[in-house]
Image 1 (cartoon, rainbow, N blue to C red):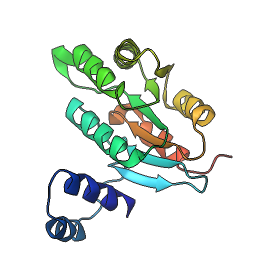
Image 2: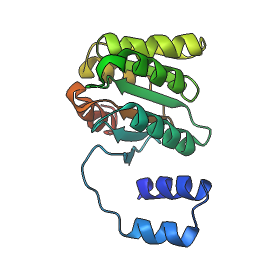
Image 3: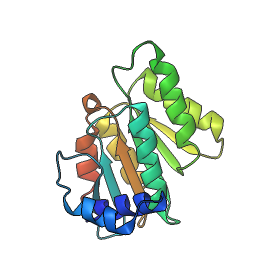
Image 4: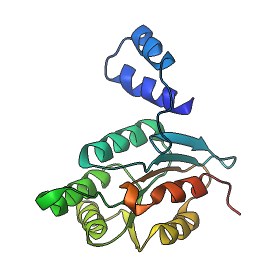
Length: 176
């Protein structure tokens, strides 16, 4: 439900007719878990699980949705590497970092060199942004649990091989 509302808000905000948006969304079905899946925890934390896959365009789209849903809330992005980008991969990771720096309060970059490229570019673009690196999905989970406060909105996104869908699912559960 929350996904449909967010999609409707973005569509209408971009000029789509309310009636057409409603008709289109009424036919929507969940195709795969981990694609813009929204979970609201009892403490007001909202998790956006978009960890099914990632590429530069889907990363930017996810940030657009995060910003549209934030409504003044603190935003946290848990970002894994994007795989199979080819020769321009490092630069595309840096572009994602620069884009993220404009719309999140906290960034957790997960993985190896490409994740560090996201983190480094984000930090250079916004020195006030809190950026931390995580070795893997379990480390990212521990860092996120320490960082997230009631009311935050959290985007979890990366290539499937990073395994962040597990991190997102565990974050969606109330903290132990």
